[in-house]
Length: 129
Image (cartoon, rainbow, N blue to C red):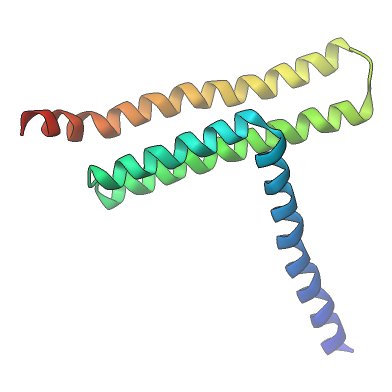
């Protein structure tokens, strides 16, 4: 009996990766802002490798990119959930959508500032060489 429960848990656990990958594919195919952030993040990581940023700086970049993509995904989830609840324009629904979009925007601004701080010194050294 315990063996069956363990298999059932393992199966649910493995299915969660399938569902997550389906969500990721949806975001890439249907959400231009998510795709933009994914491509921008890839370019930033490549630039970090080319400029030989330290491991700590690369970890910070990965964290910022991960948070940005996660916020974009959460924003999409909130928007789709609201769309499911009501098709009419409702002031509270608008506020919920606008606030979740604002969270993405605020972190995007912070991400740019973090990027400037991380890349400033290596770029200055590149031009001084």
